[in-house]
Image (cartoon, rainbow, N blue to C red):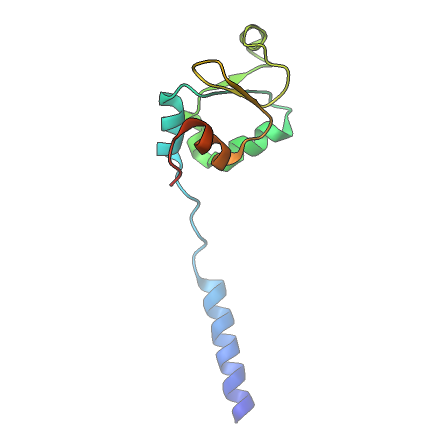
Length: 114
């Protein structure tokens, strides 16, 4: 009887964990919009895996992030002195090369993460 109760509890717990809806990803719209207001721009390329990582971190909110695709807007990237991807450049010309992550971008910009 004792083992039956334990089995029922374990099965119930397992079912509960599997039937829960998945966690929704955070909405970074306000964070991305803040980066845009502060004119923090990402320069990158489609083929750059690090760029893809930065984009994925924002989810659907990346559409608000100022972005220059260097394979299509080559002259903008040359004029900005971009040597590698991703490169983040602030309004005052400070540059941050490589993946920064959301926390790093928050520190650079002063924008608050949700």
